[in-house]
Length: 245
Ligand SMILES: C[S@@+](CC[C@H](N)C(=O)[O-])C[C@H]1O[C@@H](n2cnc3c(N)ncnc32)[C@H](O)[C@@H]1O
Image 1: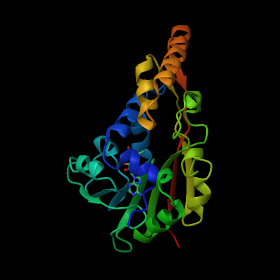
Image 2: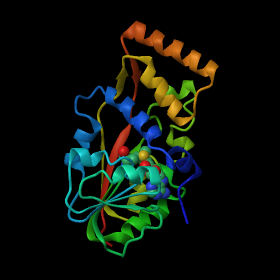
Image 3: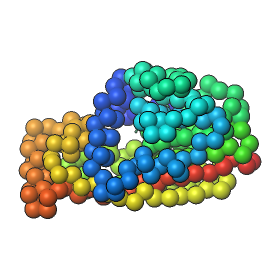
């Protein structure tokens, strides 16, 4: 049984390309410290680590780990994840983990809980597979994350249009299951000097129609001509907590 949302299945079920296109836009950050460089020293990764919804396994390019299990519901993502050196890779759903209780010391859910139909169910499942004292790390976006793209019909981008699990709701949701909740916001926005990466990002969610593309290209280019780059505000937080109950 899969708990992956219809949206997640259409976005990620058979391809890594949509995720890769979106990650490419984030290379135009205003913070010289990239998201991955900022994240890795803050990411709990004690002992036996499980990353749920691991996608292309990008984080492990920046910080290898010895006792690493990676899961994703998508066969396409799992094929990519098998290239992460030393990792055990399983195709599985976040809400029905194929592991015994207490099997891990750390669970990581990086930019994925807004893709499941029932984030509360997934969080309880994460708690089940954590050993007492184990830690969890969740990265999510705020409601205003990349809102500068709303006018171009980026229809699925916002947590408002996914399941609502966001920087605003995640701390309280984690506090229902875990203790010692901390929240830290990644500082930085995007400043994109060409229209193509922005158009590729928009297409990755829902392909733009011809008229939408022409209108978006004109507006983005006008802003680049005026200011040297197209600005996009970001709002991403890392929420961590510990299992003490
Ligand atoms: C936005 S991507 C993030 C990937 C990776 N964690 C990262 O930060 O680069 C979301 C990932 O979650 C996976 N995913 C979505 N729903 C899932 C579910 N119910 N169970 C397992 N994986 C899921 C998708 O296939 C996708 O790889």
